[in-house]
Image 1 (cartoon, one colour):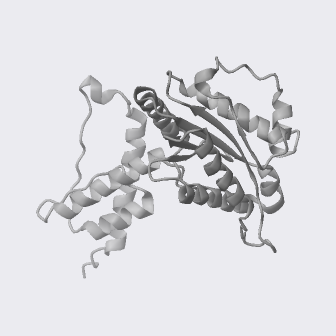
Image 2: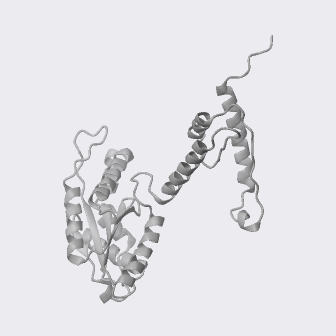
Image 3: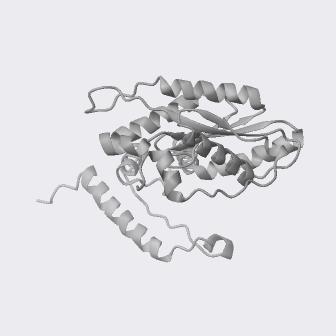
Length: 287
């Protein structure tokens, strides 16, 4: 008697093994600039009996989103729709922090540069706010990193809820966040940021394994340009960061506003040592 043909699971395992082997081989010869030099190849493999549902199952198991699949005879539209969705997902992941779903630092830098150019051309105000969770290291040390992640997610959700549709919210560091607020002058920006700091103060964050909800506070540094003269992203960020440092030094859980960027020269270098700044931000001299 002839043995029964292998089931679909066995075929998928064989295909996965082959793809993993090919992926390792390609990683050894991959050259980022190969496409601009005229070389490179498209490698094709016939997988008879595999449909879109089976391919999606494989992709989820082994994260094969960098592989593109098209049918030989079936309707290609579902496959093309999946490729488009995959590209959109990869674009989102390249620009967003996976934990909070806010923009990441790279996207933030790009958007801030573009907004400053737009501000200078239109002569309109632009506000930049940098937030930092107060004593966040103590949260991780006392309750564990999963609870710390829950705190970060909650602050991220707060910023998304409070911002306007055309504002930009980003996670720019471990426990550091930023808001870009086009068209807001000093008074309105201070009102918006004050409301966010107050809202953070009233949060009750529930963590698994922690008996009572956590309460956290945030400090904020606000920098404004009126758009009267060109201001570099580095200058505006440095001014907001200096204001944030002052908020920490003044007792945390507050907003400090920097001088108007258009009316100042380049920000002076801070004379505060790294260990002093660490103490103000975390309450600890190390770590």
